[in-house]
Length: 385
Image (cartoon, rainbow, N blue to C red; front, side, top):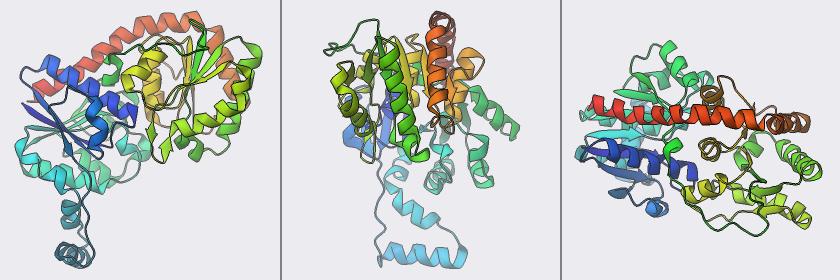
């Protein structure tokens, strides 16, 4: 079986790397003879994933103004309000690979949370036109993200794998019959433990991840996180390890965290982890933390999967849904509107401290079941094919 993953922006987002890395491993473990290929916007960033059979350039092609294709696409749009010709040119690097595949996996996870996606809709349409199997792999989608156009696209899929129950229930309520429940594949990802940096306290280090995406959506969140850091330094003896997880241009956690490091480095209790580590290496550090506070979903998954009590600076359904599946409630998840309130942040942090052992005990009970649900995704894929 030849499987192509697409809708992948590159592995400078270590969460995207984690999805590709863990999914490839699961598929190859469970489906004999499977070959897994990746179409990537930034193929040079994916060399860190050795288990892939090949990485293709899936970046967008230019539709040059006044070219033949530009005239045809302009005419089609003006006369018919149809953009399929233009999108076919722009996404031709992926579309040209479809014929060689048996199954195409749209792997973005939360790609459908960010408005309409006409480029992917067109790729999906071309996949089905060629009679290939189309799967939405480990997705999260909120009720607020849905539209009639998006629903029509989702109806094309042979299989939709929702990675948490909030998305699963919402899609079922929309009348989709091609939906199955699984868990994010990254719960099963391996980890690599590097040497601990100077100043790390074994058993007494708390990780903090903060993202520009959260800061852009709530401008006051940075000041509130600053107050939380002050509270931790004043009221505990823990070391803080600032932990980037996306280091892509224009969306770089490291740049955001560097500001916190500059402000508090004179305390001698704050560490900034480097920006060049792989997903498995970041997970290796997160695994050895006592607590974790994170905005990036896959950084929090790295913590959860190692039984590390975790507080989530959430901004979409995925954070709420994953926590609900682990704890039966949205435990220690702050919404985007809450994270500018330093009192709420500190209150949530104090709750995590008070309930440390109970949370860890619950994680040890829940995570093995969540990992089994990760494997269900491949089981459903195998049944489909």
